[in-house]
Image (cartoon, rainbow over all chains, first blue to last red; front, side):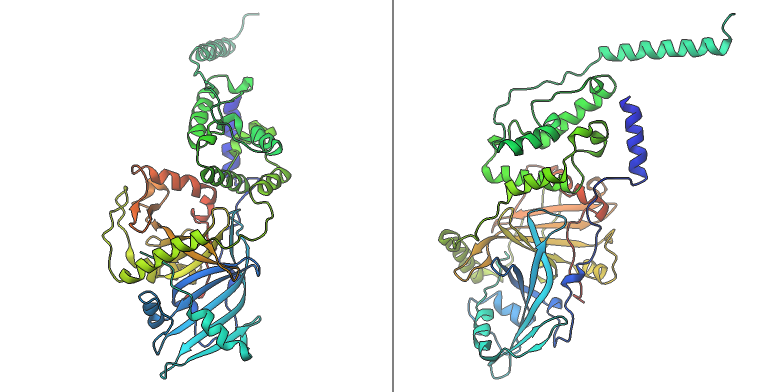
Length: 156
Length: 318
């Protein structure tokens, strides 16, 4: 009897008849960065990442080669000229494949800190969908301090 | 009227079949129920669901219906139960550290949610074992009750600070790292790869970054991610979550880095992926022997239709 049933199961399995299936493999399209950004931070290396439970967001701090080389070797905040940091903040959502995990959802903001030839950091903020340049006003110095004081994630 | 030759053959065949079937019953595997030493401690409603759906194979309290006791089915059943208890035995789970018990229960929920457990062939014959949507919700609420965000933890901060202060002094130095027990060599350059995704794992209080080598990033750009091409390598780092006074949850102390290396031929025995994991600041290879990778395959099995990969990759890295 069980053999008959096993055969039936095998046939069902072959025809792909299954009650529950994981969500198919796909690109995380809703997390894509849209709009006109001066740089593509996703093409850079990672400095560190964090989340904010209160805002339900996930952030990843990226850096160009100069910034990452500095962050991974120096416990300071005085990034050298030519460094650019890009902070991408996404809303977070439940991971459809893993109860117990959250993954990036729609982008909330992209922020850049660029250290010019004078060594002076400049700040630019992009918000909305598609992401568009937004005036940060008086908040810019606070954001520069927040971003440049994030230390690199330890990777032995 | 005398029976025809073909009828006689059929009767003989049936008699032989019945005799053989009866003889088979003499060779019965005994399915022992060893004593319950450390049963899962959980609320009644949680236990009832697990008892109904999992305990028949994953505990020392197996109760088989008559049709599972007939050979040759009983031989398969005995084998399944042995295998099931080896993976997870609710009658002995209390012997594990609390964090490991919780991680196991999360894996239970995920295996159920992804339709991997109870085994589809088991459900066909034992439909009462199906875990309903309501049952799943009860299990999830038990594992992750709504709670206020964690408060800053000074001890976790101190551990992370000490680790960072030491590492930043020597971060340019290349460590000598032993290969994994299946022979896979450590790949120190993963940290310069692009980011495939990040995950916030509230189940085990870690933050993770998943990196992809050039082959992986090109596959994402070309939407060739099921299956992933040979040569794809993922690295996944895990850090302890560290809550600070601002309410941010940072990447604290480094815990481990894990790799998945795609080579359909070379790693055919582990479903096309080579697995490796190094833990701690001294990057100690994980596992007792090369069989450690079966653990990895078991956990990735529910997403086998997605080439064993859980992640939903970000795009636009090129």
